[in-house]
Image (tube, rainbow, N blue to C red; front, side, top):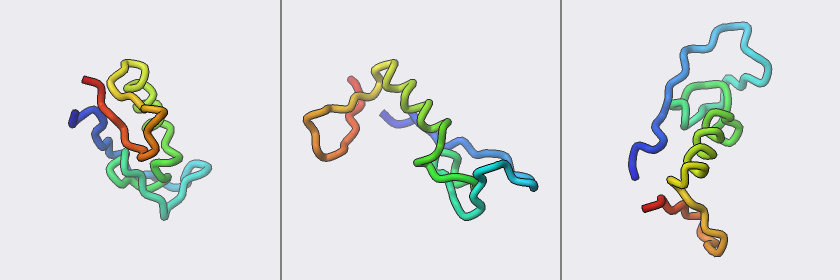
Length: 72
């Protein structure tokens, strides 16, 4: 299903930047906002966990393709 996870832009960061802020990193979940990569994005991880908890997405252990299957 489309729309389960949509980009959420962050407001522009102001100096001094917070610890761990990477001016060269862009987060796809945060609409390419600078500061971090999606792999390090706590908000994205929490959103995915919410979808798993609500059984809206499932990960099949037998699949080796890495494909995420939305629940019916």
